[in-house]
Structures are given as structure tokens and as C-alpha cells.
Image (cartoon, rainbow, N blue to C red; front, top):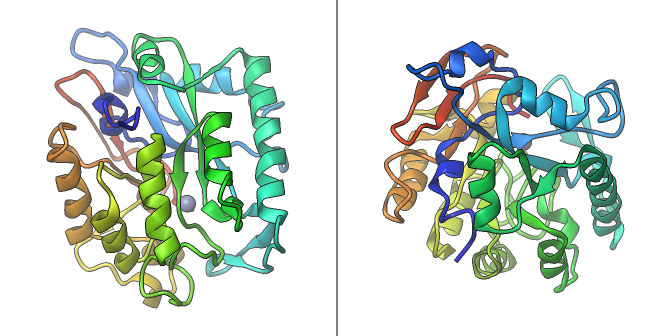
Length: 303
Ligand SMILES: [Zn+2]
């Protein structure tokens, strides 16, 4: 049984990246701080906001976050920002994506060690985070790191990865992503095999960036709940036909419901494990769920 699935609090506490929420908004009626889980957070070792400048422990504490999924971007060397959003500019050669992942994972773990932040490896670790001891879920956005190596997923699990997003901004052998040309009509057989392997190992599958057909294929293959960690939901999502980057990333409402129903039928309660992110970096909604966790709607622009 995947460890995160038993811990409905993590799923319900979906929150977009940024830790930007004012603490006052996250206090309950009794004034107590509501614990926050961030389902999708980035911290890069290049650019202006490196971990050295923004140490994670302090950032989490400032936002009242006790559980954060640090998402390693598995295709970052091969994408660049454009006016139409992030686009693929090159393709990794065999072995390059797994090498990048291994190197970045080392850097991430080094920072976590320095910060004395523990990695979530089992359900009890999630309980400890709920109780206030900060923990980090190791996540990967875009599973290009699997390369053609049948052992990479198990390696990632052994290293502590518990959350894998199948697709991102570059083509891989798992399936179609929202902002690229359709090549597979959903997930490939390998893609559905990886969903099954993640289920078996206890790795949470993240459908963010999947095309509608890929979402359907993943739902059909999965035996346990899945998440859509970031992106917004629209009744009539235009998908890749939209030239506006964040609109191209929207999830159709019917599929948001399908993901939520899968969760609801699996003892995770009535909430969709979807972190809905709007187009502007503003907090537009926050509510407290009966179990004490907050769900944040819209705190930063999706990527
Ligand atoms: Zn993303």
C-alpha cells in the first residue's frame, strides 16, 4: 500500500508552490496554526533563489508548512522559457536524464542534511509532520530520469523518492504531455507499466502535465489514488490549442472529478487531491477542513 495514500491529510492538504501564505490566514478559529502540506515545491541550485539564499527549513517555517514535496525537475537542462511558456530545446541522450537526476538528488539530500530536515519514507513520517516536525517528500517532475533502465524506479524508491510525476515539458517514452505534440494518444504501455510499478512500490503518481487521454489511461491502470499536484481546473479546458501557457495547462473539470472520485472511493475523503493554481500569484481562497488541515487555492502561477 503506498505510504502516502494512507495519510489522507497529505492529499487533502494540497498546496501550490511558494510557501507564500500569510500565517494569519491559516489559523483556525481557536487561533492554532493549521499544518500545511505543499504538494509541489521547487528550489533550484542555480539562479537567484538557491537553497543557500533561501534555506528550506526557514522557508517552510515562515509559511507554516510542515510537509513539503520538493520536486526535482527531471528535464530542466532541456527546457527554456519562451513567450509561450516553457519549451523543449534539446533532447537528453541515453543516460543523461538519469545522470542529471542522480546529481540533483545528491544536491537536494545534501541541503536537507544541512537543514536537518528529514525525508518522508513511511506513513509514520507523515504523522510526525502532522504533529509539527517538518519533513520533506522527495518528488520528481517529469520521469525522463527512468531512461531505458528497468532498475531506475526501484533505485529512486531506495533513495527515498515517494512521488513521481510522469510528464513535464519534454518528450519521453511514457506518454503525451499537455504542451507538446501528441505522439502516443495518451500513455504508452511503458507509461501504464510505470503507474503499476509505482503503485506496487508505494510511490505516489502525479498526473500534472498529462494530456486528457494520458490522465484517462493512468486512471484505468492505477489501483490506488493519484494526484494532480498543480495546474488549474476549467469546465472547458482548451489544452494545447491555447497559446496562453497557463491555460494550456488546465485540467478539464470532468477529469478533475474522476481523480477526486478515485480518491473518494479509496478512503481519502471527499476532497480532490488537486492543487488548483490560478494565473496570478495571489491567495484567493483558503478553508479549513474538518481534520484540521487547510487547502489553499491559488497562490502562484503554474509551471
Ligand atoms: Zn509543472
